Amino acid sequence: MDQESVATPFPAPASLPTRWRQHLRRRWVHWGVALLVVLAAAGGGWVALRAGSAAAPEQAKPPDKPIELAAADLVQVGARELGRVVSVSGSINPVVAATVKSKLAAEVSQIHVQEGEAVRAGQLLATLDTADIRARLDAQQAAVSEAQARLDLALKNQANNRQLLSQSFISQNAYDTAQNGVDVAQASVAAARAQADIARRALTDTQVRAPFSGIVAKRLVNAGEKVSPDVPLFQLVDLGRMEMQAQVPVSDIPFLKLGQALELNVDGFEGRRFKGTVGRINPTTEAGTRAINIFVALSNGDGALRGGMFAKGQIAVQAERTVNALPLSAIHEEAGQSFVFVVKNGQLERSPVQLGFKREDLDLVELRDGPSPGSEVVAVKSDKLKVGAKVQVRRAAT
Image (cartoon, rainbow, N blue to C red; front, side, top):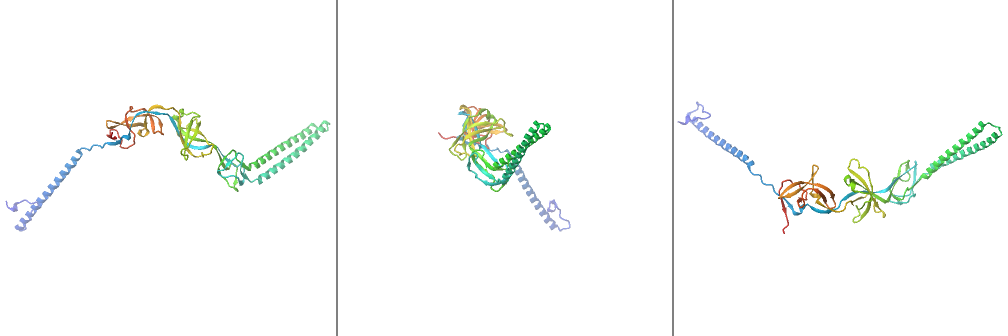
């Protein structure tokens, strides 16, 4: 076979010289071979890539790393001596407090006390302008005098008519008319005296006095201001008797009794504890809550406690007894269920628990049902804690 008979993808035109046609055939052969080599290489790479990607999922997943815990992160379920207490906290406020208001429409002429001053019952706090009220009193007293004069005249007429009636000089009807005049005059005197008493009381009300002994908490007016009836002038408080209002869960109410004693820590008084007693317990729960307000009475003879201070304490309602307990940090909550993580055979297991009363001051909670005594429970919070996770505990060398 000569070179001209070799098949080429693009035959050379027959009009070209033989030498040129042979040259073009050789070039086309070389290009075809090169193209086949490139396609073969690309196909091999694609096959290798598919093989590599297919083999990747078949590789074994590395094992999970164990959770490392210190020995202090574990606690054993065991018996402890615990007494039941009810924790309370709330604001302290005076038992006796009042807002002194104006009884008149008048101008404040003078202020006699300032905020923070101690006052006695009946002490003068402010004086209102008396000019208009005194003039009104004078007018009412004049009206009383006028009514009294008319009554005196009616009484004289009555006496004269009585004598004339006894002598039959006038009829009984005429005498009754004189008697009616006396009755009307007496009623006019009584009405005038009542109006005078009102004016006299108004004059007394121009002197605003303290209703009880205490301290001026707020002064709400200044001299020269015009006030109306029922406008607040002062706020008074008696710091001798204080009480703390606290909300207690309904579940703790059966353990509370009137007169139970407790000690309170008050913010700002480090190292000092104030004694109190349960003074009142509300009969109904607060709206929107499952809690009941209780009121703790406090003695404040030295006046150290002030309104609005925050206090907290505990009421011992049950003597100490032996119970199984765990730290509060060991308890987990999910979907309304309580549970703990128990370490068993180097793995974590989830164990449901039923809780009793809590002692937040001791960071303990009663365990009524759950893991058996001696079980090791994880006492720390961590997102890594999961059922079935392996655990490695670092224990101190002995």
